[in-house]
Image: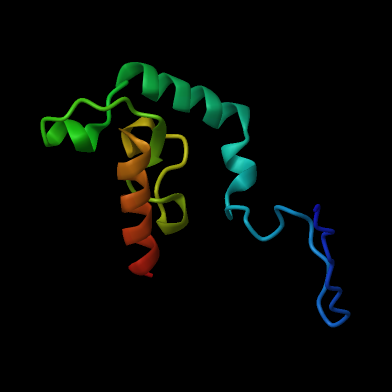
Length: 101
């Protein structure tokens, strides 16, 4: 028997769009053409995760990560401030940065 989705309306809460509140503070920057081009160059230059390589593991990089975050004064469009990371290493680094605030 199919179930009918029940909607619970809470008049005291404002209605949100599906992705509202999940955006990064630098969303516009990360959607810019300049960032996308620089990211592609970095991943082309170093296609393997730099963190995994330091441990002797060969993992494809998917993320061009700022070594010093933009919000903490890091250069946004400087390739010297970027490192290639796999998803796992990027998530670990981002979690550590989030807790260090």
